[in-house]
Length: 282
Image 1: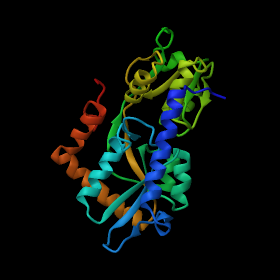
Image 2: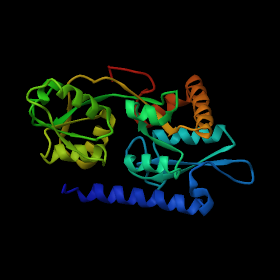
Image 3: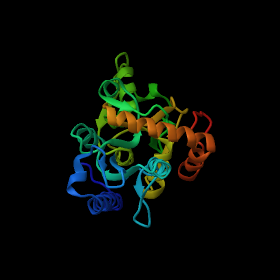
């Protein structure tokens, strides 16, 4: 079993607890069905699954408020659409898909990306909210890993739902020796912990998340090599009529936010740069 640093455990535990308390305080029993509960003012409440510990995209700030790039976009959507209200629930992404199918939540906000399996089951917003840059991550004293080819025969920490894992598995079809995988469903915080503690030789992670975790926990890691393929991210919903209507409203609002500069401003505020468009120079 991986031994986590106490500081990160405390942060993650408090974040999940705080978000859960916020949800419980604001939701009645009838609103927990995750099917857009209506109140007397014709406002529909939609429930959003989010990790809540994935800074700078979704996290609890110093004032114990849920915030982050993905979250603040939805708060702006709520502000511009008076018939929509969002409530947030903290959960792993794997649990999020289960909750989505069980109609306990209505959408997932956590830098979601397309893949063939998701595309057949779920509905994505059409407007990308962000374009993630990823790089190889190793300990600072290592100089033997700079490209994907250097990962052959080495152990790489991965998240099973990540595009990086999918790409590396495809690479492994012809690679010799094969890349070995250490899989976790707890996100970048644990993949980076695995690298820092020597359980894995490398990971492929979002540069912003790597920087945040590395600085907070002093892991002694570095990003190496070129930026890998930029990955556009979206919100993901159930594939039904009500969800399609919600997705259309989110898309229309995102287009407004792109046009008036609000999305760029949020990106610069939370991501310290304009990640609303692809770039290989950041």
